[in-house]
Image 1: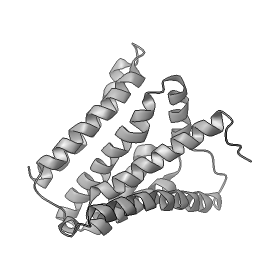
Image 2: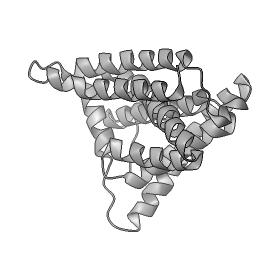
Image 3: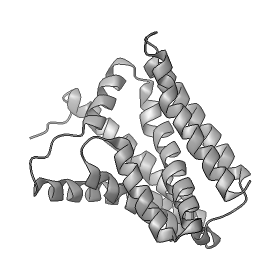
Image 4: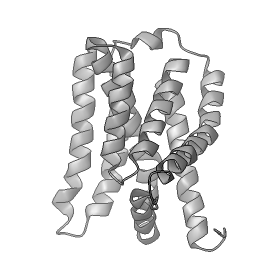
Length: 214
């Protein structure tokens, strides 16, 4: 499968998974549909990734699995720090509100715990394949990989749509940087999944009073 076909199939899969739960709202099944859709979509994208045969320019120099794992885990802490830096910068231009996206996810998990799998695993896996592999790949193929990284980071920010554009732009650029540095999409995926998992766990601990927030 060519890069163009792969990118189209990946983005199309994401679009279907993203909008399909809307068909189940009236039946009260939107959350289960989203959970299943995210996990199935993630599996499908893994399959598409292994089926395509056109690597990106920086994938020709791939780090060892041990380095990918170490960079991925280390990236979790750096991503959290970058998020705080972005929030600080946003605060310089006005009042910063809590992430509506995160708050909504936590509320859903509290009522339907299995949704945590979508938020912590399915969602970030799909986002890495869409915003890092597909968008960076197809835009970089016809322009420059730097342009692809920039556009994908902006698209990543607008896709979350919770008023924290700078936070998601910073994260999008960082995830792409990890990917390019190691030549492996699995590096940014480890970081993204790990970060989402950490955020969800901490937020749940705060909600239940196990962690006190000043």
